[in-house]
Image: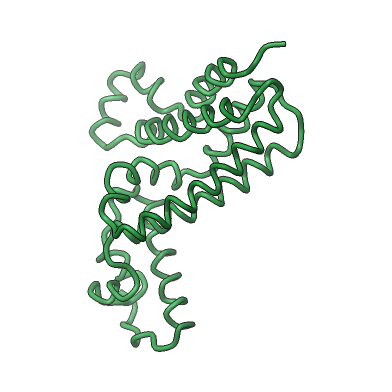
Length: 217
């Protein structure tokens, strides 16, 4: 465990400490999965007593919700960058959206927990801040998809993004099985064949959705 650091005094020191806590949580979540992140491990990694975290985040849920909020502009920038200002077919749109989420495993993992526990466990204003940030990115991606997709309107773009979020959250959990399930998949490989193919499964589902919502010429 790193030596315990002195309490942050200035606003700048507090921001540095807050960033360090978020970085520690991000690293732990990437290594073990969001469900395994504990406040004790996060604070140990930055040399703080667990009680000190309350000066920066009221709870584990608020800390993780902050990571989820940071993930939205990351997804937006990656998706819009991958679209590249091109005109794309429905299948190409699906491939780009799937690829953008495949590149952000922590965000996919967090999306499962946002709806199940994180949003409902924080103060109203904190939940409002998360929803505002998520909505701004979602709206920007909707507009970008509608502009890029041949025969795709805003409603269709929203449907694709909604399906992408839902499917990615579910499929990501399947693709990171517990030790028990890994043993089971070793015994019955055909079950693992479906469960572990995150990007392939997500792409297949999104292609079906994208074709379904695209106006045919």
